[in-house]
Length: 64
Image 1 (tube, rainbow, N blue to C red):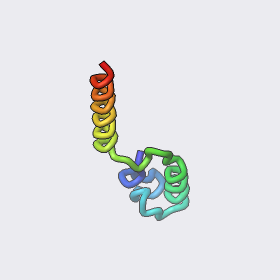
Image 2 (image 1 turned 135 degrees about the vertical axis):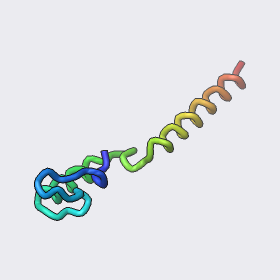
Image 3 (image 1 turned 90 degrees about the vertical axis):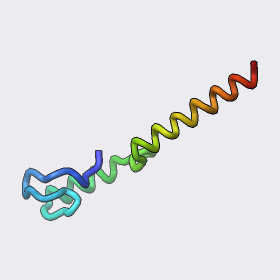
């Protein structure tokens, strides 16, 4: 989940702006949680999956 669309319950401002201590703490926690594929869009993940499936099919076809 990205913090750019979250609204703080404490100050009613976007969390990405970090207006209050609660916003800043949530923003820091979310930034630390982003892992290996945290910044990749879902469309890019689907494209990567399609490429991997195509490569697997190509390799399977060549070995037959």
